Image (cartoon, rainbow, N blue to C red):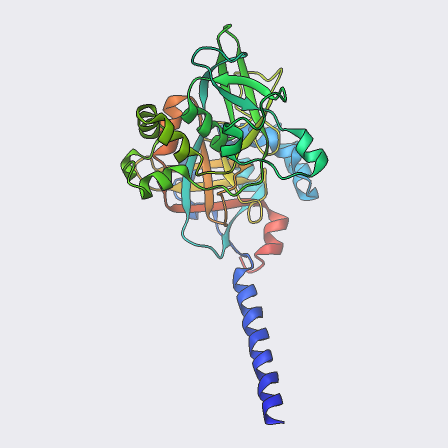
Amino acid sequence: MRSAFAAFALLCALAIAATAAHAQRMPRYKALRFDQLLGWGQDDHAAALRAFLISCPDISAPEWAPICAFGASQTNAKAFFETFFTPVVVRPGSQALFTGYFEPDLDGSRTQQGRYQYPIYRMPKAYLKTGAAMPTRQEIDNGTLKGMNLEIAWVDDPVEAYYLHIQGSGRINLTDGTTVRVGYAGENGHVYRSAAQEMVRQGLITYAQASIEGIRNWVSRNPQRGQLALQHNSSYVFFRELKNHDLSLGPMGALDRPITALRTIAVDPKYTQLGAPVWLEKGGQFAMRRLVIAQDVGSAIKGPQRADIFFGTGDIAGKLAGQTKNGGRMVVLLPIAIANRLAPEG
């Protein structure tokens, strides 16, 4: 009898502990005032409003529709955000981490020739139809997809192709003088593992050299070992050609709308509503105090205080993105009705 009671007590204790742990993981919300946002008054709110309106109609929650409609006619963007939104911090979570991403600019050819030997593939739908397991990066590099007519283009640099996979979109400047824009179409389903981290672990490069430039230089000097190092990441991304997409606009984000340099972030949609304005307070060398829009997602972006900042297109944007790894704070702007429900105590 005593042993049965002890077992029951243990089960109760475990249930209580599990409930408490679940409660700790559940998002908690704290409302703030706009004067508590560092640098709020100095931002270009009109630029943020333009970015916000691009994807605002894609938010399905009914509280957003009248705000989106009213925002299109606003001339005072700062007053608009202050009138219709409440700043809300989402917890729990680790300390904030901000990184950067960009749209690569590659050189390529529609045909495999000369230095253009690294294919950019469409999604192999044959695998989807049969349910067969997708090949790994190494298997694809070794020619598994050859002969399936999946090539969008061939590019001239394996490292640039690899980083195109990481960024998920890019421009390819072709030998005929035209430019093709490609966007994310899907993945092979294998786990993402950082080739850069593995190269540092093996002592092939230093942490300071773990950038596109540093990895490109090492791979160009060690092509065979370089290919093996990149293949440490079994994950592989497939693309679609974005036809009739204005090259003056940014690439397409998770909402299938153009994203805006330094006004778009990738977030974890479990915690942050896609399409929502987010106040960013990033520290570091290139400190930021600005209103951005949650218009994208990323496989490595997890948690309520985690964001990837879109820096734009090309090498300069890539360098800035690669140098970004800072702490700070992100505050989501939510319609007042939603904020009152989530953070009723303010």
